[in-house]
Length: 296
Image: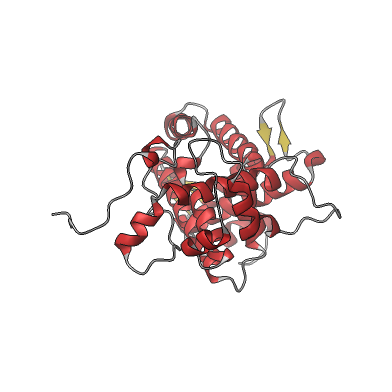
């Protein structure tokens, strides 16, 4: 039975907000400045909280999206554009029906420090409900092709291209990649990135397990599903960074809708997996040693 004493999420203005701000944000915003869960739930769903998130998301798109600008001196401080003063000033530019009045004191009432706001902004930015329109439908199509489609190689290439190309364009992905090198010593941000990967890799591990089961594949001895997911995820991060930093490197081929990530994914799959009906039982190291004539 529900606790009738628990504060309820505000209605009216909250439900008038655009998707996904109209959703329950309490599972996403984990660093709000309230001691008890009921009051964190209420604050997470306060339309004014959504106003600060909307301002932060717009600043992400402006500074980390494709073509994002630099400062007047040519420098681009990693998180300078997300200072409390910058975010509260940006609230004034919110579209309706978001609140347009923000103050540093009101923001600090919600998040005690900038790092706690940034951590929650990361959580919100990478929340599945914030992915581009049509993401879920395209993900279902790609899953069907990978699990049951007649041309597995083509399905891998198409999925890898779409995933890498979209990552290059998404400010939230860029933020996550940028913060990986700057989060050491910042517990809130580090935990947000860790939670992001836990959710992200969990969905991919399920897909990999489905592919292996339906296509009669198994991991080589000594390798785990976590190893496969981490290898492909790390490769994707590297490809995305290279495509952002060096667009002429050929990581993405937009004309052919192919990417180097597709080639790497096929190489990892070929190395990590064996057919159930034709497994040699060798570890990856043993298989490589056998091919090149060295002792394992």
